[in-house]
Image 1 (cartoon, one colour):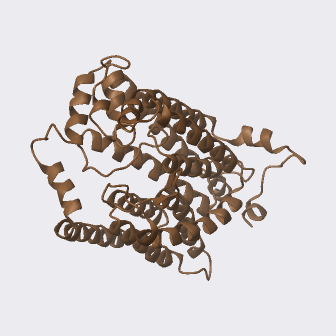
Image 2: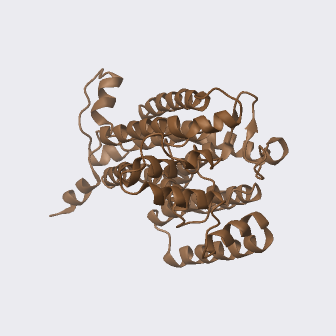
Image 3: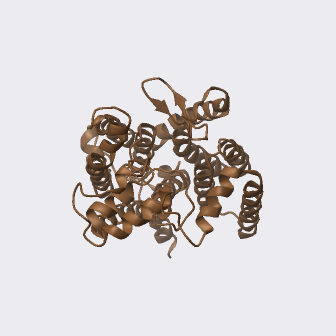
Length: 388
């Protein structure tokens, strides 16, 4: 309907899929993702052998798995980026119901792997964390609901999406996984704001989040312990935050040298949640700045391209995915430098983790699909036509 009203650029008949995809996809963002994955492999070579030795495995066991899951993630990302926004939406809606159902039954069939939080399904040869897959498909589903609510006689999509996000946040908090809960709520809040939510309502929601946080602090020993550790003026050098802080300080500007870092021998999660500490210690501030620049490039280019998009669903879904991607990276690095409480969140495409890598490939693939240039004109064309 939009193209019938505002017109569309001509499309060559029989245009092959791959050439059309290559002309329209954001090559800068895609290249940044590949570089991040390469950096992740480089850091994995340094961080994972000590863990493999402690577990009695081959030195490069975790690196080999990262190559496998990372390669699968890149293939999924490329495939999803070639899909049309309408097909991405349909698949995301179906995937949302499957992921939501798996999250509901997780407390009964899941496992905690000795970490105190039931977040995974154990498949024997691998594990699956359903919350990683739920996040991107929920963003697309919620964007569809919000966009539909803006149509004449449309459904109450904003209200439905609000009920869904509260249910998801509650399920995640029960695991407990407050980091993923906060990230999901943030992505929904960004889309709700872009969709035109009243400021007063957002203030009420923010106040509710603070109230829930205080309740969780009083009711959950796990949550309280992390908050107390974050607020403490001194860092226990024998904790993960202590090891990470010391490693970042030791790295300085250029690092202590490749393979010379010591934090990987002390941190059990050096290859996942605290991978940035390994980067800072061995390669210094130079590599950390490069990693931050790559994430900034992906998020900023995606948002700028979405600003020219006329379809409200694509704008909302793309904005939610881009902000969620960037904030997850910010949370991971913020925890390592003690700007945020410990949350157990991976660094997208850099940290080790099968679920994280494949879900990240799906999320970025959808983002690339939404930010492709399409023969529909730009949103500025509407205003130009209205100028007398």
